[in-house]
Image 1: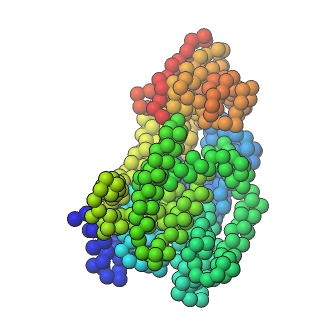
Image 2: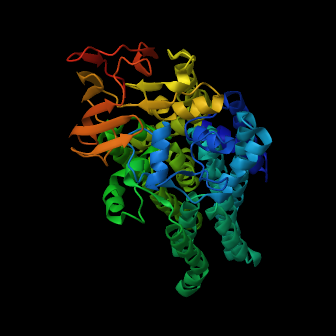
Image 3: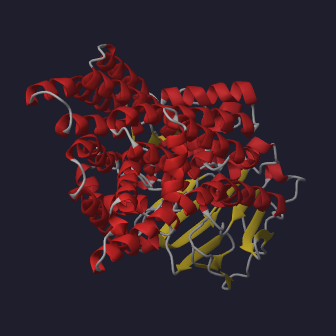
Length: 582
């Protein structure tokens, strides 16, 4: 008996209660995440604001998703303190309109302080609400075994493992409120429930205050009205109009209030750089949808930027295979079943569009998977009930591909979901704590010293170390300076008593804003770009305000898995620090 049959049989035995099974599975996965609850990456930045230990004194509790507002004086203040690295653009901006999600983080901080367990329980409750909304939607749109299987596939997907990271919770909040609104709209249009359409607009408006993921949910509503909703073309246009007006008002408010991101932040902002966004859209969308077919692991896009084109090619192949399976199963299916599913397929593809401008990862697939799970369930159900009995070369090849799809989404997916929380904890929380615990830093007189990290092993240690130390109450130096976290060989040549020249081999700093001749000055340090590679500087001169032998200068280098004290080389000589794995 296949996993497809087992899942569908379990749902059928629950009679009219398959949603209870999905909610139970989601709750179990949530409980199993709790032992690995921890704060990671952007969590540390947000919490440092709430704790009052950040140099940022201009961000309030409803603006915690504003990592940087782009004001040069604010960016400079963060650089001077050591909270931002020297190579961040003076206009570096990463500011998102998420007051509801931000306010809920502030509420968690009031209730739980710096104990991550409460934050994780709160996140699980929102995911259960998302599951409830999706269950109600599928009950109306895709009743029967396909809808039941889709709901289970969504509940156990490994894609949701990323949600153990509190900073991604805004996607679940926006998704939960948005899908409940979508379910109300569809029920109102198909069942004549009068409050449905009004509640949909209110729910979507509320979802927009949680995050931009609500725009992705709106794509489903537009897809529904475009190809599956009842009524004439005029009636469908009028039904979609309130949501369209809401979206335009939101985008106008978003721009008017100055929210958005600069290119140097790693985001492609379609409102500020529409051409750049459109150029990058095809390969990014191909990768993202292909990753959904193969069960996620989209975070590799950020981890290995050197492999982007290989990922796009793999995504295209995955998408072609998945599309072929869907088409083969679609041709012989009953027309009444197609009617309820086709708009969800279109909505899944359209909902991925708003995420393609971000540093892509599994979090970007949560909303697209609402419809994507229906497509996967459709293929697996049609194969098991009809396709596997057919003979011939093509049906056998189709059956083999479906077996692979079933293994990915019914066997591997829950294992991914279980493995993700401890993996993320190890990569993004424990690694930073260990690096700080084992760093060769004294405590006596540290407040009068400048700590210079020559080569951090990763962005986690390179960018978030200052925030970690501030939150944990560890001694902070007068200045914390991280020179690079590029994954290449670092050669530091000393050219003067107070000067080091860095040459990177096999990598460059990810700082597209900097060009040859640019000079950046922060407290106690002057950096001049001498050469640059494809993504940023590859040779930089660093001049300090003190000689490198001065006791107030504390050099650290990443060697043998920890930050070790590094003596300054004599003038004219070079330190070589081995290549770090990307």
